[in-house]
Amino acid sequence: MKILFIGSGHGVPEPNRKCSCIYLETQGHRYLIDAGADPTEELIRRGISPDTIESVFITHMHSDHLNGLIPLISLCSWFYKNVKLHVAMPDLRAVPVFRSLLEVEGEKLWEGISFSEVKEGLIFEDGTIRVTAFRTGHIDRSFAFLIEAEGKKLLFTGDMKHGTGPVDDYGRFAARDDLDLAVAECAHFNAMLYEEPLLKHTPKRFCLNHYSWAYVESCYHLMETLKDKVDILLATDGLELEI
Ligand SMILES: [Zn+2]
Image (cartoon, rainbow, N blue to C red):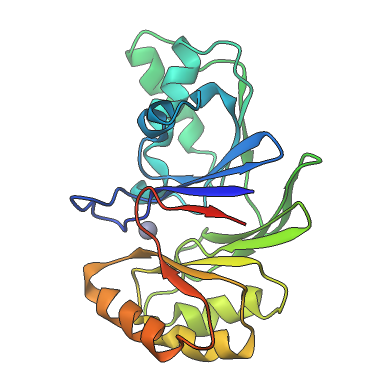
């Protein structure tokens, strides 16, 4: 299974880090987790046709996780008309907005694009991956996703509670010893708050993602502190992981 960080940045794009967008490929099937950055250009640059993305899972409706959906939906509406794209997101009020925008552009939201609402629990299963959503305390409707595929378990935290996410949120869905990968945000708290939960339940790999300037030093501190105990890496745009 392949993970590609299209965007590993936080709310404000940096010169070399775009907003949140992760590509997942498993058994010939392709998915996205968040679409804060426009995924279409990077996918095309890598020879991956955007219309081969089957589902997009949005953790919450903040612009740095959502706005890249617009170019994807737009391209799939007017150009890739054989597309079957499913978008799971926590608030379906965005659908008429997409529809209106496309109408203003002289296009129509293509019928091959479907939407479903993310709620806590099992949200998706297609015979290849299984996605379970857990609420986080970031905003009213914000979620982490546990993705199971090829007998492996991957956790994507999305954004968590300001100030205390690793304590109040991460522990609830990461208190398990069978995670092959945990991709965890660090834009809203000091990374050292991950130390205790990581020592209690250690994933095979722990990837700090969506880290902001304010907390990047703490990310290095966490990596140094746990260097003999936890396999920690810092996500950058273009980072590829084979799980
Ligand atoms: Zn964010």
